[in-house]
Image (cartoon, rainbow, N blue to C red; front, side, top):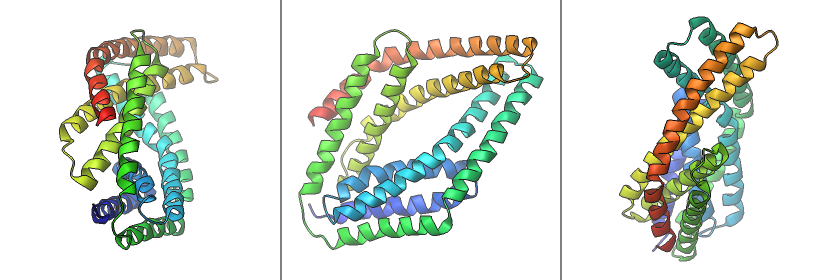
Length: 284
């Protein structure tokens, strides 16, 4: 197979990334999220592109894109936590003064994180990054036929599938957040690997991708509740926190803990299906 499909898939992701990046620099919630997703998809394709054309530039571009993912991560996490705070406050009828105290802290941290990300994502530096990635696309278009990149794509998919299977084997039945986090990360990586395969080779992977998206949503929901719990614990340790405030925060945390336990049970009930998917993709 020629590299035309690989070049087209990479070019499409570059376009999406560039559009989202403009919104992310302005601090738009949707722009931050879309830039993170687009950056992860680019990072999945660029290592494959390195096997079809000059690898040094593709590797450098991938490092630059990873930097964007990392810069926007804390901003995105705060956006998600704010949303979960509002939802949980409505579900459990949390007292408004405590919720407002948490809102103010999240908003303050979000402004600081966004300012740091915007400063780091200066327009000139991001322009150079996009020029590098687009040069990779042009190099691919001129590369002609090679089978090396297809083998690379298959190896990455199998590696990701085995990692998911291993994390599910380690999950056990006890509620251990670090193990759940490992499954979530492995699920996300395999999903992006299959999306790259589908975009490049038109592989019939939609059903498995949807299963992984559903798994990622369930695991992400659990993870985000845990992050909100951590935020409540931090608020209780702040200087000036009264006994009454700490008591309310403990009650709120206990309510979130109950939700996490319920979600954990749902994850365990679905884990066998995810394990079967991982095994199938590891052997494909």
